[in-house]
Amino acid sequence: MGTGDYMMTARAFAPWVEPIAAQLRESRRTIEEVARTIPEEAWLRPSPDPGWTYKDLLTHLAVGDWVCQMVLRAAVSGEPFDMSITAQLDQRNAQLIQERSGRSVPELVAE
Image (cartoon, rainbow, N blue to C red; front, side, top):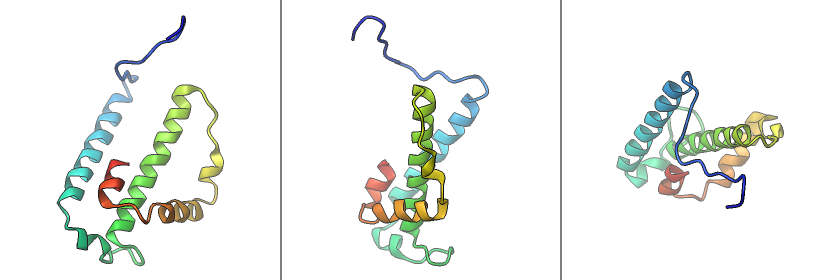
């Protein structure tokens, strides 16, 4: 690293952010644990949400997490965020889910 460069070694949140971040970490951990216990064949079954399989729902969670990470990275780095990703949300969501349709459950959980 050069002069003036730094590397963040620990996460530091504003006091009001920490409880929210902790809850998000715990929710993610719970989803990962539950997802790993579900048999592979169950993921392709229809969910209670019409037109969606359980794998579609997991993919939707992965896409939402990915979008949140992109927004937060932009905010932390000071880089601009392309808000067009949020325009036509239903269509964009369907596209992102389709792009991930070939991924395995472990790949979606890791995302």
